[in-house]
Image (cartoon, rainbow, N blue to C red; front, side, top):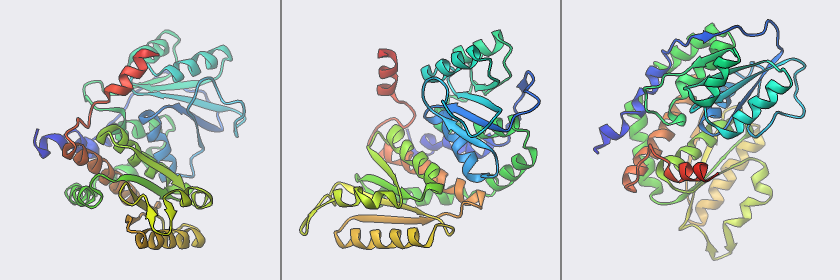
Length: 321
């Protein structure tokens, strides 16, 4: 498969944001916040939506059952499962039903959508014929979430910003990252606010390129993890690890100082480092960086001769459960 064929699924990214979902059923009249329940790629869209639109009352749950405590008095639970068969989220649904708590569902199908139809739960059915992995269906999921929240003006802002993304330029940057880091295991660092973005790129490398990658948040990482890459004055793990910093113009000044200092010290020890400045108030910048990360994972998969769109070991694990 040549590079153009390999990147074709990713290149549907911008078109996804033109999606017009249909909400089947009626949402509750009043709720003071939303708790999105999902795992892996099915929760990424909610976290990215929260990053881009922090004014929205969104929190998250990514485990079995339901949260013991929430910050809302009358929350609406949105169950997000791309496949509709995510074990943890089906378990969450059973608990919500038991306690008669309001919810809505975003899914392509599976058991979860079947339950929604049987129990007359409001739902959006995502396109089934895209053949995309959940992490590559971000646009469909973000638009669906914003539609449930009745945020048409934010949808229009999102669409306008996405239309301006220069995908060929993003792919060129991704190619340079493949050359820069070669086979390094990447460690991503950012502040808390940019962690949804760094986590999403990290996960794309795990699933797509089939390579270990890690993430930590500043300043916490400086209190323990910092030391682990340096054995002593003359020995380090620079042959194994590279560092990928995502920095915001709105980061606390001491976090900015920490990024600069970490990079300088790591480079003294011959680690490869790369820093990207991302203004989280500019949708185009955030989603361009995301596209770069997705393209990087896909191109690295090609170099490593692995399929970026299949996760057979994860599938085998789920089947074994």
